[in-house]
Length: 315
Image 1: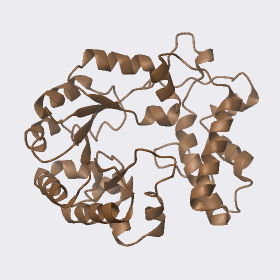
Image 2: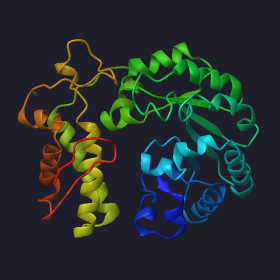
Image 3: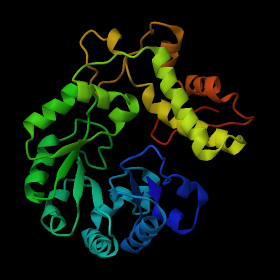
Image 4: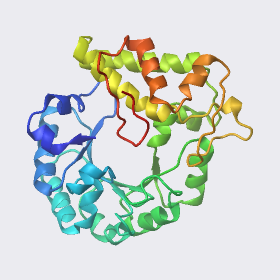
């Protein structure tokens, strides 16, 4: 997600987030702001300056700092501004645009918006089956998403929440026929091979060495994107550590009595099948930093890491 205000200011760090890699055959950018003007101007700039297939508007981000500014899920409380945003984007953009929403901030409200959203030119709406207040607690409400899908038809609704295995995916696709697709968020961060599992309909159990190769590939792409100088290395490290703050929640399938792992069950403490697997499962940010040092060298003096999504910090 990129912030529209930072893009409009020409912030180089923010623009680096929306750069397309040559290997990406379908590419969209998600942006967030607090008003239609910023979203429209930023979307227009992105369409003109980037090779995009679509633009997604984030109306679900629950982070306190952004919410207090009316960004992300903060816009759900102002349906008039949402309507203006949709009208403006429909007029300005030649590429598809989509909305990503939560059910509401406190109480569910977006089902009331579907009647006008389906006539606004939106190509798709993704509904996360939780309110902003719930964050990631409790199970996602797929019954609510199905209700939204019925109200929004014929605009496709994609559901989001708690998909961590091919069994989870097949369950919601079977039980909720009006929902036309699934968006995977945390599940892809915790278990990036979940898409292969869904495609092949099987549980995978990669070794710690195989998972380390995935991290090496990520680092390679990071250095290619941000550069291999000190700034590029530390940018890559920062994003790697944010990813590790999710990856550590994965419990290897081979260690589970009854796989697959369930998203909202607290991961148990476990000893891995080797030292690296144990470290990869550590909830301690110090261990994530050590993994980053295996791939990027020692952290600089005075290094501090504070994850965005409420996990342990390292100083």
